[in-house]
Image (cartoon, rainbow, N blue to C red; front, side, top):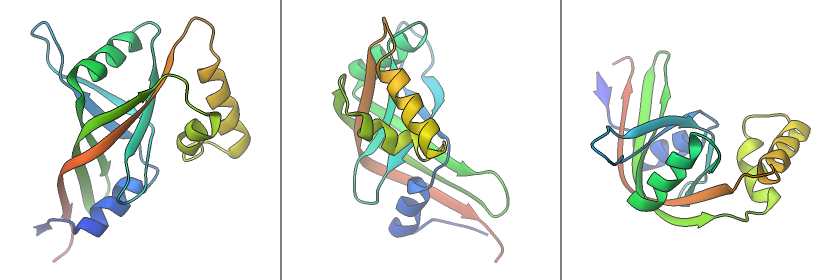
Length: 148
């Protein structure tokens, strides 16, 4: 039978290194933009994720800055199934983040040397503006489908 995660469980689950799915309101009558992203979260803190302003991601940055709010979801796709979704308000868009702030995210998904190299290449990419977003969780939804 499904059950709602406790506040501690849902925050710990969001803090795990899972690929998150971000959704932000779109414009011009289009549906919301929904994309997978790497993220970082510490229980009780802010959700952080990044993107850049080159090519198709320029739309993502513009929409995030215009809407000022996102929905963000992480899931466990195998049994016992689990998900946590958070509605969050963007509180900061850092266009000159410190390498270590970006490594705090990339290091969750890559080995240490690769995480630093990836962060440096993203931040220093010619012709690209890199943005590290900080969002404050406002509302949560979560479920675990497990054994009774």
